[in-house]
Image (tube, rainbow, N blue to C red; front, side, top):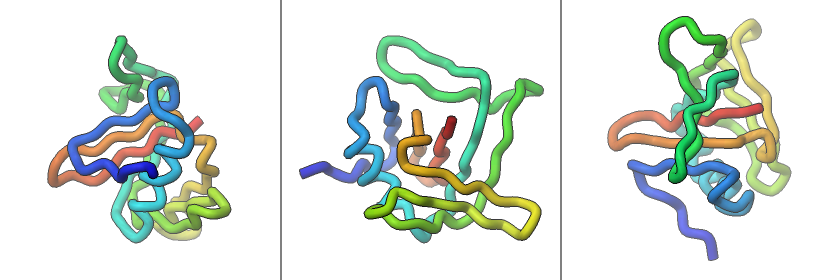
Length: 107
C-alpha cells in the first residue's frame, strides 16, 4: 500500500513510482495547488524539481485541484482564460513545504 506523504515532501518520477505520484495527486483533490510548466530543471542525486525563479520560461496556474484518481485526469480551473488540464503521467515532480500549497510540475 502506498503511503500519502505529509508536508514537507518532494517526489519525482526518477526516484518515485507512478503509483506514489498518483496517490499523492489524489490526496490533493479539493486543495489549493500550483500547477507549473517550466523548462528549467534543478536536479541533484536526491531530487529533481522545476525552477520558478526570476525570468526563466515558466507558466503557473494556482487554484483548486479537481480530478479523478481512477482516470488520472486533473485540472486547475481559475476562469475561462486561466486553467491547466493534465494527466497523472504528465507529472514529473511535485513538492510541498509545511503550511504551503503543493507545486505540481508537468511536462
